[in-house]
Image (cartoon, rainbow, N blue to C red; front, side, top):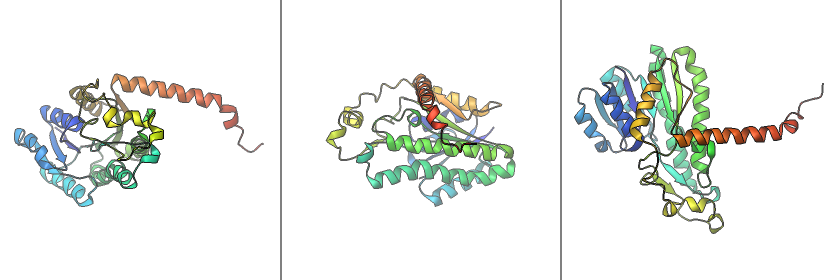
Length: 276
């Protein structure tokens, strides 16, 4: 039995992860900004679930949640940084406060929880840190520049972290999902308040009022949860776990396009060293 601490469990993938972990008999610290939205999980699994309020932008709540998890179950074996939300805007449209909040939640919220669990993991020389990214970090759609940026930051951070903690018996990995049938493109999606007309045919097409994707996404959250547990429990967890056919296809297409670009400019790229 292992103990998982999962952020953002009120709905979506976070909820699916929590349910799958608990169904398999593991301990789970299930968190949400409004703890009432996850209390039913603690009521259903009174011996193995602990429901806690957690806003990952709040230092005190992060410290308290990890402390409560360790007091109840002895340790946090797996941290899943899932809390987050979407934000759509052309880069020029992005409001400063909204962008700062997006980075605070996704990037610095992830950093806060990582720093909170690492002392215990280092002491035990074991543990797994799972950080949720998105195929958006790879394909960078119009109107998702800021969201793609926070997810790209998480991926780079995780790769460095993975190299730093590997010799300590700790694993760090990224999960990159595509479209899953959750509230992400509905309730959890925010956007710039004032659109700029010049972006109507690019970023504007992906504003919520024009989006028909919500409710038709191909991904099954329950299957994503099963896949995540399988990867975490494997003998060699991957650095990056892609979830969904759309993600696998989009990732490969992005790699091919990047390779073509690198090849086209390779001579110029290699022309910048000192002549020997």
